[in-house]
Image (cartoon, rainbow, N blue to C red; front, side):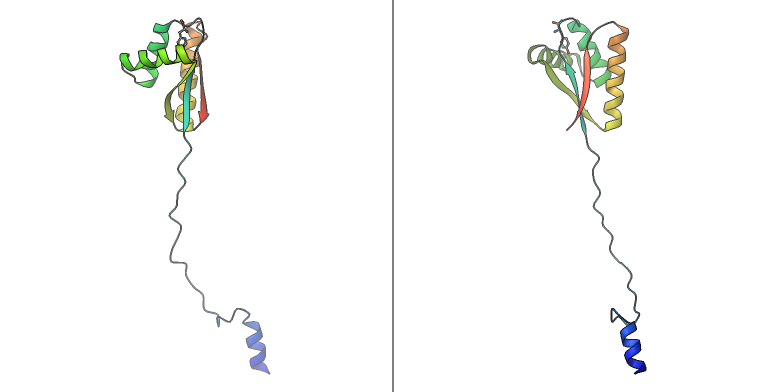
Length: 112
Ligand code: TYC
């Protein structure tokens, strides 16, 4: 009778043994990346765009000229891929630089 009581109390039948979790998940999620894009317009001088690409995206003059021409012909181009914070900073720096020089150049970001 008393034994039945104890058996019923030990619902999971482990006699009170407790285990220690030995393995933990090692899977880590990589942070999302963001593309920074430059848009074409009819007024920003080509040399200014080339300068922006050299100054803020570390491109050589040749690389910058090539990307600028792509934007001029196709309307838009990816100029770099960064973490959210870096992309946001690049966009803000380019937009501020363009505004200070009174050019309508647009720079945006989008999740990759
Ligand atoms: N279309 C501009 C012009 O003819 C040049 C230009 C290129 C402007 C790229 C913006 O992102 C741009 N002066």
